[in-house]
Image (tube, rainbow over the protein chains, first blue to last red):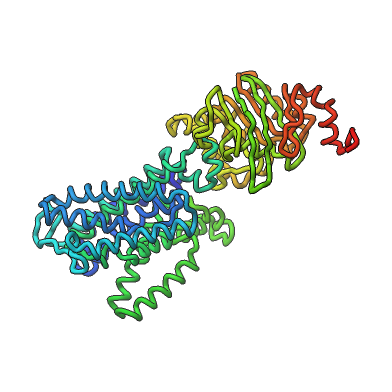
Length: 337
Length: 239
């Protein structure tokens, strides 16, 4: 992303406006439930990957436990509605606050851990939450799951058609992207980059490691929980295997990494590539063969675009602009801009 | 302003700094010299907070620093550079300096102006947009200095910022240090360039094998028999 450079700003306006208009018009054009549903799924994963990227890409903590926050969001919104009649719109905020607190606590515990040790700690945390979701049956009904009543109405974030979810998903993605851009331009954003580049130097300049990592972890967790609440009201049924399972954490990370870790738009772009690939393969081939082909194609993508799909696109654009110079174009596109 | 008392640092049985005591008064320039491996950087690290001493105390403006981490100490007004330079390689030179200015409590906009003014002063303004990773070593050392200055320190610890500089650059750096000092900045400087440090320091501390073997004005220190022995390797007394 070339945010900040005058050239980049002009380009992002030229690109962003038509894209925004097209995105808003999609439900009017795409009426087929399969394709629109696919689009909504893409939006959700784009938002989740963007939220994850705040912790992993900006703060450098590759979490494999984000399904926990997703689950907290999904279960909080659902349970508050089922037990107390609280609108999921409000439940979404409560879930975000809960997950934010949890994210802050995890951030405070794990900030010292580096590399694989951080990954293992978040992985363990995710599994603990999953086990809780499965076994705390009085609250979650365990593997039986929780069903949200059909036709709860707009005030309860429960719609009969799926078009409204397109717009909610779009709003969610805009929120996560907006927060990402705001962080990158703020003091926190500069501190996070400094910490990622050289922690000792950052500390010597007065950057407080714990505060920064806790803040990034909390923000990332809260936004992920919003995604969970969205999922619950969209699918209107949740169980541990669709919300807190380890595979969800992996998928979030995968989408973001394929798209471009640490970049602003990369993780969202990753969802556009990865999610349809998985869904379409599953619709065509189903089950095992689809999964194998899916994995194979992901390997190819990662090999072809080591800096993510965004990095690949940037290189292509640079190459086109510089008159197909095979070399110069690749320069500088490798950084985690 | 800075008072180090009985500081000892043990690394798994190896004594890197042994019972070091010294003070740097406000507005002064102190030099810290000694052969390689004498423990100069380790002693520095106990002041900046990167290393906790096994014994002894470090006080800054009368305040015991024992419980403060490097970030807190920086915010109190202790700036430092690193001998092995640590630029934020992926960031522009401007943004490197901006991070330092931010911790003063400035907004991003203010910090950017502080960064640019600092770069201007160090004659690096034209490099503001260059990625720090692509700077040659001499300029990386100057970037270390720019970043530390941007935090608005009252005590600045310089760790061999003149190593690898040519004579003209050394003179420029000396002039800059004098100018900063004239504005009230207190400095503690580790330097291998003896000629340079003797020109600028009012007090020189000589560290050898972790012990401070001499301290005083440069002229006196250079005549000290122990110092001569360490630097020339000639034992003046029979062992």
